[in-house]
Image (tube, rainbow, N blue to C red; front, side):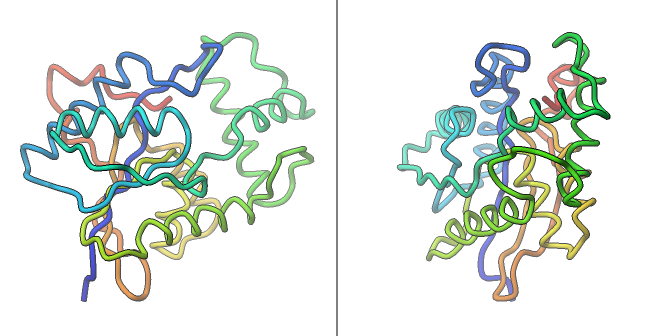
Amino acid sequence: MFNKELYLVRHGQASFGAANYDQLSSLGVQQSTWLGEYFAQRQIRFDSIFTGTMQRHRQTAQAIQVAMGDSQARHEHSGLNEYDFSALHDTVASHQEFPRTPTDEEKIAFYRQLKKALHLWASDRLNTNMPETWAQFKARIHTGLLAATDCSAQRILIISSGGPLGIAVQHALGAPDAAAVESSLLVRNACFCHYYVTGDGLRLSSFNAIPHLDQPDRLTAITYA
């Protein structure tokens, strides 16, 4: 029996290559607005809204709520934050297997390096100064998800990042750590994953959904960074 529903959303496009990555681009705001409009059109209302403490989480939630006409107060939990992207970037750049990415424009090359670093981190094979281990990262995400779902709300919206979305689907499916890494790199900006919450945990209903972007005039708005 399903006790409640959870919509887990990745933030809209952030500012890759900018001095401050942790803010939405203009496209990121639009993606989030379209998602809010989709929820409103489908009459999907939320009893509780949670975000991480990152600016891109807050901005995504704000755009969604404005589009929905939802003015309820949001809850924040640092357990829903992404891993330290800057620390991992520095590790990628300095690790002997990964030369520094030459330019910000070479996103494909950078994310190929990032994927390798994430797999090494997840298997405790990365010599790193990361502020938390992979196991600590997973435990933090589980704590954040529990805080958001351990309430009386029947339908919950959580805005977070790619890493936590990967951990959530891993948890729901009982998948290995490698699957969490691969899933985290697949999720698109402003996508949502739909779960049912039971006494035994999360039950995945849909993953990486973007019905609000899957339209002929919005295909160029499908992004991953």
